[in-house]
Image 1 (cartoon, rainbow, N blue to C red):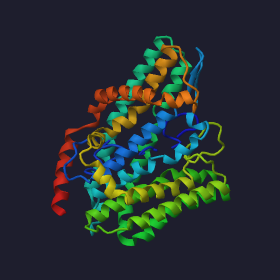
Image 2: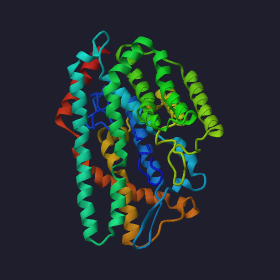
Image 3: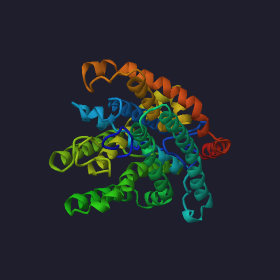
Image 4: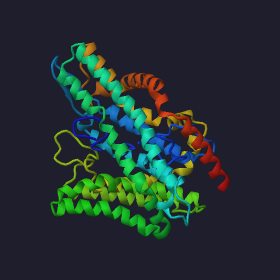
Length: 413
């Protein structure tokens, strides 16, 4: 997330940190536009749903703005008080894990040379096209909205500030496409070297971060935008590959929880002794952002989030059964991800510019007491935006592919 805005780019992103059907096509920013087959991996669906909902909640908590009639000032409510503690719930690893699992389920069978799989690369291109459609609609809608706002007398500076914030969450999609293209290599490495490959994937961003702060190689730090998120993405690909290959065994829940606690302790230690800020997202005025580019604490946090999610898998699967929100998010997560900031802008803009009232002081008693009302207003607008623009997330081709792939995977199991 950027240092002065609630958008997901500093990073995600994310989430996720991410369109397309996540399990039945090789595509998945945070979304799954196709109808959900009955044999989908419910665990991945619920991880994605929780990740997207956490992204939305965290961004909505960040709303902090003021308007003096000419200048729009935007801050970050989580920069006040103990707000930084909530950034440790940063859900981008969940979105990248779900995207990696989608790639793993749609991956190359054992013994087949991945570079010969023309269908895979066609799928990557199809995923890019599927993601481009809702993104193009978002940008087109905001172009029209910006022209209307200027025509209505809103100062150009304020409009430009909003327009710059709208596309910031799209960083997630760029990273996702790079990782999607690399997914066959990650799957191949996992099948051949197992945990040694996983250790290398985790060590690479940590090593780059050490060079950044130890040797002053700041330019190399931006490679962690891909390397850091390859950790949860690769974990998702490994999880789905094992299930697809019929290997259902894995670390026990106790071992996963222990690994998560160790990773969190390592992240806390690095923050205590190193140059890293306590917040896991960028904050206004901070010299270092843990998210732009991702740092070692973010990598360890991602390891912890993935381990905890896998440890909680039986509980999450039971919870997801019969929950309409999970299936709804599977169909419309991309739309929610793209438009949730717009919903917030509409409500905050109406209060500041339309009603001429200010926002409550961040982290104050009034601010906390008003969260249910503000969140309710954001949600009401978001539901309307999803109903209006959600159709661009779906495609008949995606629906057919989802049914065919789902049936094929079911026959293998």
